Length: 243
Picture: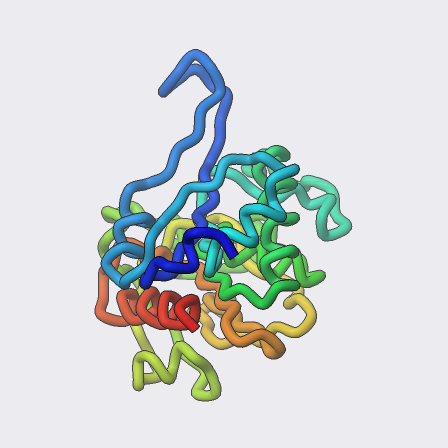
């Protein structure tokens, strides 16, 4: 093991977002919302940010104690779950998806704790052989606005937790409020995953692995720490990474 063995806090790798549109820079750039790293730090972890160097994935997996896959303004190419793009809202980022799929697969094989948030939750499902609803409004009729207009740190709808789940264990109640900023969702659930939370309209809000010690995907954005339950998710994740 390297020098990080001597650190008391677990090192958490966080995947960056990427774009080549000339906004932040005229050249391709990486980005990450600050609150992802802040939530990891507040829960007792050391966040490090992982650029898309595919040949360094083995070194990344050796370096980190856990993996956080955040959301972003992108969608997973449906080719990864055997479909073609069927809606104009589907925006793909092949460099990101190709990198984080391989990184997540290697982390999963090593039994590193994984926390997937929004797009990261969907990536876990696709990695395990599942599929996605490509655009919620065209698939189901719902009174819930899953792309909320309110500021993202405001919870806007309730979800129901399954009692046999880590989320229920952390919260101690069967219903919690979450924020919502997504236009896709899980359709077919991947292998070795169980659904542990639903929105009232049936949209899957959380999944957990049935074979790994910690692999959790949540469709909302707990990094805003909007509720005490959001903070407990990060505490549980960092605690698993410290083992």
